[in-house]
Image (cartoon, rainbow, N blue to C red; front, side, top):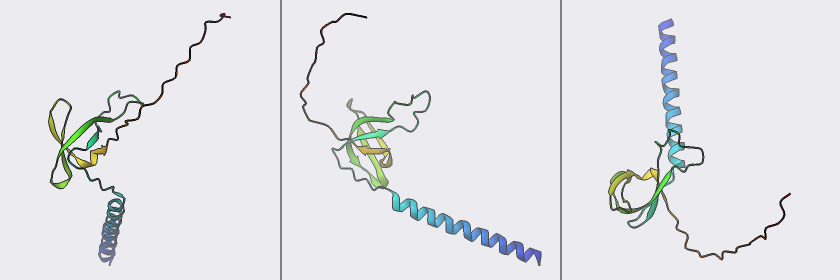
Length: 116
């Protein structure tokens, strides 16, 4: 009798874990952002391995890099400014938006005054 109860308890725990995994996978898949990169796009690369004394304000995004090929299964081939090619996972990239505006620079000069 006790072995049957243990078997039922084990099967119930197995089913609960399986249903939990399915629900969390559906939730994560629903919240994934689909990124479409085209050849010629400028992108930034996220460096997740930048841990050792990186500093709080140091950016983990490096680049910009240029997309030269979009491969199967989300792999992207990038080229640096120096001409070096390398492949990365597309989930580590985001589009780089260049700013081309020219602003007016105003300068204010203060006359030296008495030091108290």
